[in-house]
Length: 195
Image 1 (spheres, one colour):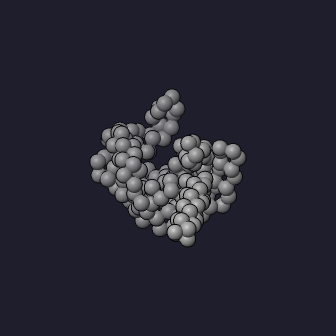
Image 2 (cartoon, rainbow, N blue to C red):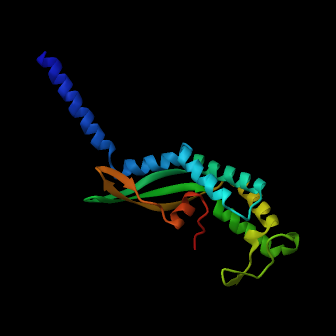
Image 3 (spheres, helix red, strand yellow):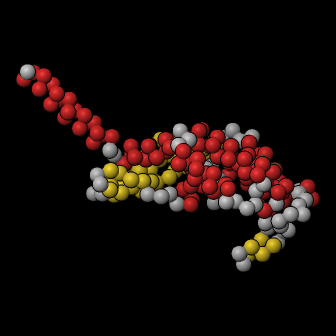
């Protein structure tokens, strides 16, 4: 009986120890990233909400863009570079490898600038329109440019590497990832254009 009790006690201690080993900032970040890679319902709902609220893309363009983002989620990879923990705060730096949609969009913009006559739209925009008080090129509102950009993004196979630093707080003894910045979200989606 003492032997069974000793084994049971060791098992409980082992499981408790494993539970604490799984409750690290790095593990919390890995779980966060897995929600994207596994196409968690919350991630897809958030993606759908953002796309549904877009008032520039057509329904077909929205569908294609959604597929591009899902493809990104399923195909990105990462490795943990560093973890720093101080009391109830932590930072975890990862190196992220994503499909390089940003370069494709940049190349599409260059093509547009050299071939403006191929992009005709009667719909939502004209060049040099005032948007939010700034005079600028509004090609992102042009259906023909959006179609061209999405077509090129569908052909992307090259990847780029970038880093993201995740910030975490320990709440009720669990590590919680803070919301990502807009820049970090662009990096995760492969849309971050390096300056």
